[in-house]
Image (spheres, helix red, strand yellow):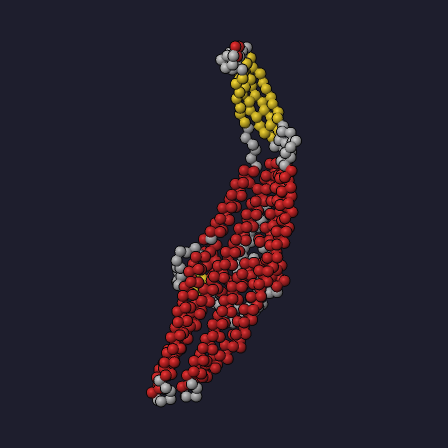
Length: 423
């Protein structure tokens, strides 16, 4: 058996895990990525089914090595006939035990097929585990992003609420019309609507994540992690070289061995088996006994399993085509995830470095100047909306980055080492 268990340490886990706490936290209220991944693996129905399949393959392996059972037969001849053969006066009683001897390596071929089945089942389980980890990490990133959107919009609502006293003072001082209070209230209520939608999205993402970790209802209130930690991905060629070693492709080694064994089994069926028997016969007429022996061999005149051999040959020959098709599909998936990772990395990095500082500086300046009467309320609300939009775009880019990272790590089967981390 060539299968070797391979552990996966998701790089997304490194990126999303918070710094160690210096005091005891409430683990049931906040969920970390490492906790989510361990619970997802422990509760996955797909992995449970894969474990059962490994057990079933082990049963087939055990059964493949057993010998055929001997046969015991009893015969009664020359009885209940006519004249001298009436009743049991001239009866002959025979007891015989027979054994089938398989020739042509049939037993060895069955055992080889069963051993390859076990290897294939192990590789399938490894592929399922990678999928479970990647899906859970992606769901965690989406939940963390939805949580960050809620926090951002809550901050915007609080910020707009703090404008109300300032608006009131300006109206009372005659510096602004009373319509500005209505305009400010409209902006606040509009943001509250967006906040309600964001909270609903967070609850939906939270519920999806809870299902993936085996919970009927979410036991956690929030998720803990640092969404802002990102880094430049390695090259596409480096990722593809890793992807070619993942269970999605390496499983074809076991599939090829399995189909070779099936071909050998089909060829072995053309060799006839021998059934040998030995027995004891009692002649009631003269009360004598005798030993009998038998040997039977089917004649391979019509059926030499020609069709079975052709089928096994064609099934073996299509293994390479199936592997090539799987490799092409994997290349497309890795390419799409890689480009999404690069694009979201650039978007998050540029938004953080160029857009957010300018938007924050403009808002702070206009807010300060608004109190002095240098800017209108419309300019202030536009500046606040631009700052919020930039923050939400950064959150979306970060979610896309970590989702793509989790997808790539699931496809390559290993943690990605990012060249740098942008704080």
